[in-house]
Amino acid sequence: MPPRLIDPPLAELDHLANPLTGGERMVVDFFNANLTSGWEMYVQPHLNGLRPDLVLLNPTVGIAVFEVKDWNLDALDYFVNQSGQEPELAARKHDGKLVPLSDRPRNPLAQVERYREEILKLYCPRLETSYGASSDQAVTAGLIFTSATTERIHKLLEPLRDCQPSGRPCLISGFNDLRPGRMSVVFPGFDRRRSTPMSTAVAEDLRGWLREPAFSREQRTLPHLDADQRRIATTRTETGFRRVKGSAGSGKTVALAARAAELAALGKRVLVCTYNVTLVNYVRDLTRRYSRTHGRTPPDIELRNFHDWCRRVCLDAGRMDEYRSLWDRYSRDEVFDVEMSNLTETIWQGIESTTELRPYEAILVDEGQDFRLSWWSTLRAALAEGGEMLLVADKTQNVFGTAGAWTDAAMPGAGFRGGWLRLEHSYRLPPRMMPIVESYAEQFMIREEVDLPTVEQGELGRVHSNRGLCQSWRNGLAAGSMGSCN
Image (cartoon, rainbow, N blue to C red; front, top):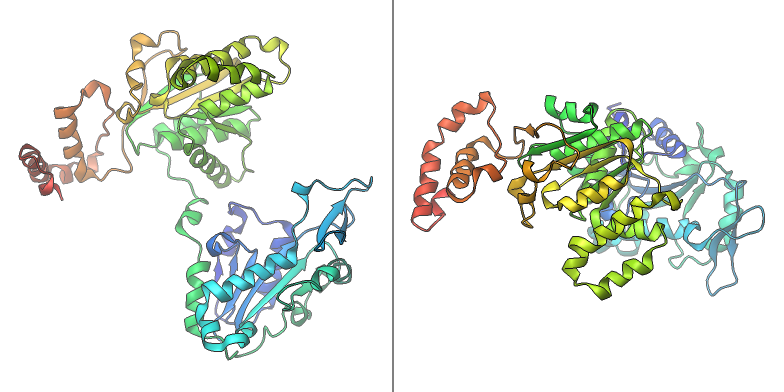
């Protein structure tokens, strides 16, 4: 039998962004061992953001979508609450208290019905167009509970099954069905050779939604760290303070994320602080990728943009009245640039009487060129004695006009000793663009205020061969046009 298509591959399932539970892995292994040839398996497929646990696809037989639940019916008392207009799934603790609404289990029958409905209506539209009501035959939906018997689950969900709006059946299996010889119970019809509504064209329609996106594959790997990046990630300076600069694409954020993950793995309390709100998610992704590639669990790191962190400190310290009053007493710019930071630093300076706050053993700052020196001072106030701080910056990306403050003359009290560590190479900029960038900087920027990348020796020949391109750019600029740089 030819190898089964499994996406992502079996060898990579332990490194998914949302790691498989033991029950989910049990189900994957069960289907892989018992499905006939021709069935493809898609684990946690994107499916336009729906993320079902498992989708099975056979171009000549059909489609099946399964949701896997590891609910322990002995740990909580699950029941269907029928006191409202519609029955709903609920749970209570053994002391009789209901589980909070935000933590209550979702109706799994409605969940898989939504998967099936969208596959039919959105992702395989030619099914319904060509076969109408009979298109239902092509899509199977099922629930598998890996910590309860089929009998117990049927009894629990029976009231919900009676009120499903579609009236379509949903397969329900417990762990007692996950054994050899029970495949036809878990997934009836899996061994059919052909189903009329199904076709290779329909299968290809769905594959486009099932295949793992490139960004998801990238989340399981980390960009290669060069020697300088590895040094940042795995060592600390004698003082614990270090500053790093480099151009866009030089790997500053990658190195910072790797260092944060290394420190968290040592049990350190780590804060990563950015200026841009959206960068927080990118750094979080990098720290998790670094940990997974080293076989570790996702790191416990606090990631915040600076102003959100200040607000959180005021909240934890019980000083929100003072925080709110800033907006009445000062302009918006004054609050963001100065006053919020000053209040936060004052709170940390009186930390002895504030039990809600604990100092950090490491604070790492990305986008340092967008920070004010006073903000760095505020962050330092939150550092535990003997802790570590890292600042990475790129003066070239001086969007807010603050990078000029980060001069050696202005930083004697910032805790740094020695010069900046510079990441030399850009892994984002094509080598043939280097002469253009350098020429632009020479004519329009102060060279001391920008961080230009260098070209590795292996690329020098290619750079020299682009002198004509650079001259064309200069000529176009002189003529008031950039057209010659296309």
